[in-house]
Length: 388
Image 1 (cartoon, rainbow, N blue to C red):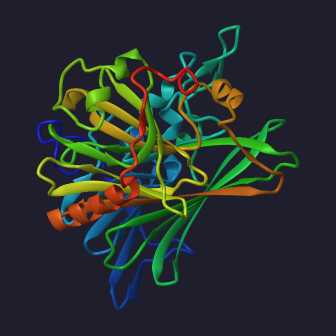
Image 2: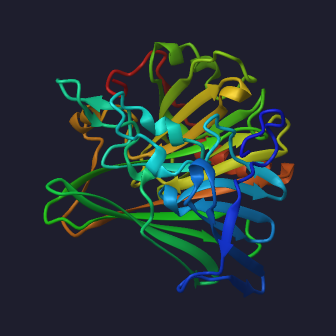
């Protein structure tokens, strides 16, 4: 079993894996004065995840589980013995071939959703959209999460270990996009750097969207957890979320029947365009930090789903090119990125699993420094330009 609802703070366990030696072009290990990194490569042997490629990266204090078959998703991170993940009722990983992305209802994507980090895109990344006839036009969160990487390799670059993969989203007469992902860690390191380049191989400009659905549950998320975020503007997504505005940055304990709430942000950044935020556990002994480049990801979404553990107790921290509305709604408001013919756009996101009060407090100081004394704009009701 991958999920243990009786012990929600415990690490998740993958199904049986057939491990194999590194393929040509892949590292087994790398060493430096700072330490050693070991890599393992395998394939899930049975069940709904059968055939999923797995790469495990061990920096010493941190272990990262990467799933190239699921769009280069990160399934779980364990740092200093603490798991950073969530317990999805989906209980995956689930092979993309078993996820009905184009289910007529538009939400088949949810049948494979259980990673710490999953990408939404590349053509669309938000709510499902339908044609006037009722036919599905854009499925929930797009296709890239359920598209296997076709080429995976690992290498040493400037003293860091990089695991990379290429994932394609192509359709005759429509789009010809490639996502090149580079996941980078340092020997002895406790931080994950992600660099995603979306390239347009077509002869005409191409539109694209990207959202990083980063999902954190127990043990960091518990009753009394809080979110530290430097922001310029906040709006609830709907009337239900508006009721949570006074407590948008605080989390209750698990509650059966809880209805999800979503808040939309324009975040603050430094002179280089970098921003940071952190989910902090009660007591401040653990935290999950996130930093990224806002020049290509100018919007941020907080998804609060504090349902019962059995139903998926989790919060989503989501940097994005746009808000997760139907694609046409976002396009009409200019929140769709355009890549010129032969061009590309690069997104940079860093994950910071934090263990120990000193590390948590140090990261919190970075967030507080970004906010400074500036007072943000807070909409008590949904901003009609931000939410459909």
